[in-house]
Length: 330
Image (cartoon, rainbow, N blue to C red; front, top):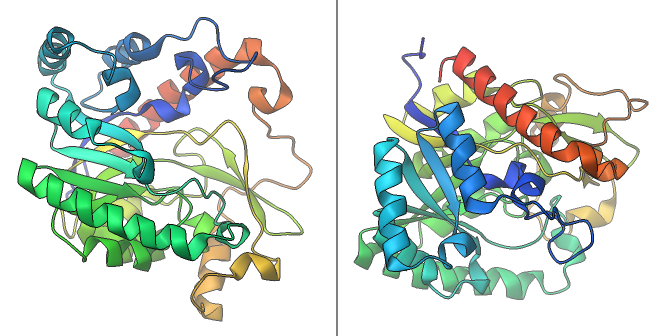
């Protein structure tokens, strides 16, 4: 039964946790899956699980004719699936995503802002310039979105803090947040800290979870079945419910490579605003839930180069994650 303090979630999928199955992992290298299933394979899994929302990878949509767009729209309508267009890095986007959204009558376009991962902005010598360019692109795309009756939803992609994302949203109309529930840890914020800050601006949710393995430099974020890691979903959903009656929420198990957040290195903090000891303590305390010992080998088949196991590994994790979220009450 759904918790009455939560939004009504349209539970669905995005493609970024099944990248080997779909043929996206290792593209252009010998390790790319020669039998990658692409858009059709993605839709098949969505239909199997009974998804009600989907993030659609825009490079797939760029290959479709107008007739194929019509067929896809009819198929999504028949399955009662709400589409969200998934763009790439906002600085690389030319605007095709807006055409995709209009043809599928999608209301939301998700963007990542930069390719910085693990909170590692200090290792980009051009961080300040990059940030300014992101601001300019958000302003331009925000206006385009308003004119088209759309919303762009910028993701917390392990690069910007909750306060910085809110600042972007408040620059212009037409901009909200794609909230990845696992990606507060890489910017040294607890999931609850992060949620409380961004909740009024959230327009789309990516359900991610991590098992945390501590290291001498900080901690590693290890992909896991959603609902078995450190993310406190019940508390997050209750916070979102203070501001939203309904939200799309798509499953996205973490990447096939662990994310190492090296925040015990002094250099890691360059480019961040000061943080209180209490705030950092809250983040580190949150990483303790379902944590892994340093001795456990929790690597994925991709990291072990056991590619023949990857399709089953990815799809089993999606099926178990979907079941966990349904059992939780979504």
